[in-house]
Image (cartoon, rainbow, N blue to C red):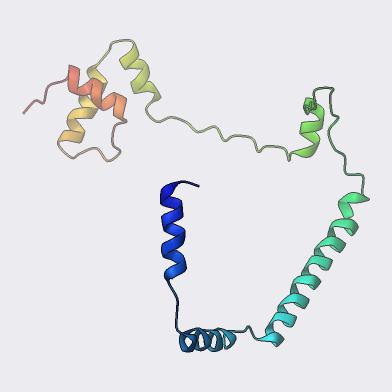
Length: 149
């Protein structure tokens, strides 16, 4: 044992507490006891919840209605065929095809014909046109068009 450990043990053994303080603390500690009736209620409730959960897991209809698990390979990897995935997932709804109101203007801009774009942009600058140009058409108009009086 090293020197500092020996000194520590000597100093710690020198500390004593009065007998009255020890008995007072002991009496106070005895007063801190949990209520016994609440413990029984909680214990019974937790036990009943555990039993209901175990019962539901054992009797769940998926155990008996032909629920299948995917085939496991030698590497313990799940391999699902597209047919199995289609059976497990609901069919996706068909996407709605929406007409782009700016398609003609975009095709003219891609053909480097900026007359209609500049006309539409000037109307928007003068607050005549209601629908706002999309971002890429606005940027193209800012590069190519001038505001006329």
